[in-house]
Image (cartoon, rainbow, N blue to C red; front, top):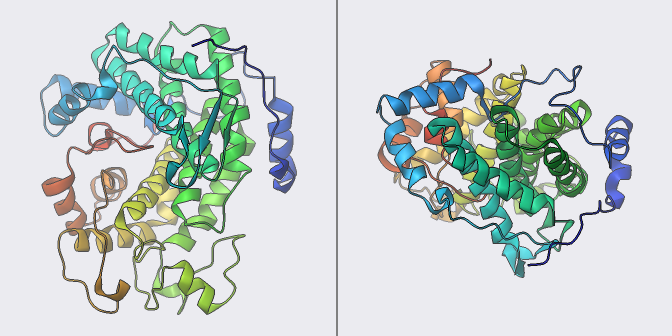
Length: 408
């Protein structure tokens, strides 16, 4: 494939919707990427996107000791297709993703390449095999040399899926490996700032199903840490703080859920339709419970990714949303374990299956704080572990099971 010279794309028109500080940060940074590992005044911990150095040290020690569940989780990751040293990235200049990725022009390739880069970055940190470090960098360099934009209906979600994994991989390689050339790091930073960040932080979808914005904020927070961009980080946290209460219901909210910030739903009829026809609201119910548990799992995991990264950076978002997240986890784990469905819940029918999620939030609330989450524990230990990859998440039993470290 002929690789065209990379040029920075135009930023979306929705830049005008951002607060002035974030607008200036985004516009002023186009073509002006970091020229040192970290901005001295940013205050960010590096590596600090989802996993920190002490967390990685904990995992490496457990794997070396052959302890469970890390031994099985590491074997699962090592034997996956994403871990292959023969992996060949397939970058595209324009990634076009329609609804449900139809059309699918580079969508799967970008998501899977990002996951492969993250997988090899983890393998490098645990095994110290430099071949994995070089493979991760090869993938990151391939995409930063080519991609210019995402288009069509799913563009912001696609940028979130890929941007979340790319930022984790890039963060690990930038701060745990000495062989990534500075000019390539800068090119990768420019890709994140001009291709992914505007679409997840500016081109928002407040009226869409809530897993979208939670995933987009997951990517935005990770990218902001990589870029040492405090203004964008703060904006992503602000959006997260509004979206989580609009996605997970608690009885103090009143007879109806909170509407999504900026997303309308100004009548009871519209809110009920937004919650897929659910009219009875109880603690832990999610906006997409009556759609499918798979999307709820994504919502829980994306929310916990933001909280975990923020905790590494010294902000305890877990504490702010403790009741919502723990109630949601227990509610959905109960039904995923086979509890009969009452008629008042989604008309008596659920599409179950949370997917490879829950591990990160469970680790924080149960293992670090001692909060009992019996249904979540049972689901993880009997059905989900070791948790694998999906779209924007991967290997979370390996990285976060019983990991006591929340901050360096």
